[in-house]
Amino acid sequence: MDTILKATSLNKSFGPIRALSNINFSIKKGEVVALIGDNGAGKSTVIKILAGLFRPDSGSLQIAGKQVNLKRYSVRTARALGIETVYQERSLGEKQPLWRNVFVGRHLKNSFGFIRVKEEKALTLAMLKNSIGLKGVGISADALVCTLSGGERQGLAISRAMHFNSALTILDEPTTALAVKEVAMVLNFIRSIPEKGRSALFVSHNLHHVHEVADRFVFIDRGMIVHECRRDAMSLAQLFTTVEQLSMTPVPGRENQ
Ligand SMILES: Nc1ncnc2c1ncn2[C@@H]1O[C@H](COP(=O)(O)OP(=O)(O)OP(=O)(O)O)[C@@H](O)[C@H]1O
Ligand SMILES: [Mg+2]
Image (tube, rainbow, N blue to C red; front, side, top):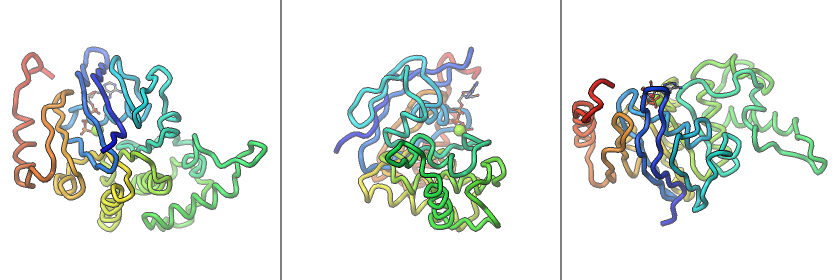
């Protein structure tokens, strides 16, 4: 099976905090990988590096078999390479109207190079209504992202990911602000990703969800990958036990973090 993403020896510190140490992992085409770990383990930091938001201090990244130049890697490049990210925190571009937020980095353009604004606005509205069924009163494509509720923002980001049918969809706690029905839609969406040969990286503290949708689990503890396992080889009960043990194992030299 081909590999869509391969991260090698990623390191990242924030001042004195060593957020990631020697992170190695890969995601195959058609695979849903869950990144599992405690609060502060480094999950979002890994995701932000893959999404082009943070630059690692060292390490390398291959996307679809090609080495990425991390010095030039950005959110735009990541998107252009087919990586779509649904962030845990409020999505980027708070002051942007919804349609721009959806199409940034991949605008529809006419033959003169002008953005096809009308079409982008219409598509944005259709996306919001159809993909996860958001019915916010009077949502318009011109509304600013910062005027949406938390659930609506996650909905927008998820709709975007669904619409662009990206090679790799990264979802960092995508369901925290959603209602039950919307959660089911998002889980169904993640489950459907491999059918099209696409891949996903999924972060969630809800181990039921993780076990339901992921093919493989990657465990991260205090910035290090400590274990990997295929779902076939780990029952839900074993998954709970593994996570419990993770947070109790002391890491030599890092007891104070
Ligand atoms: N922008 C930042 N500046 C400084 N420190 C940061 C920054 N982002 C993350 N950190 C630190 O890096 C470590 C890893 O954080 P990260 O957000 O990746 O954790 P996480 O696994 O996503 O946790 P959670 O499950 O709570 O979302 C933490 O100690 C955090 O405080
Ligand atoms: Mg996080």
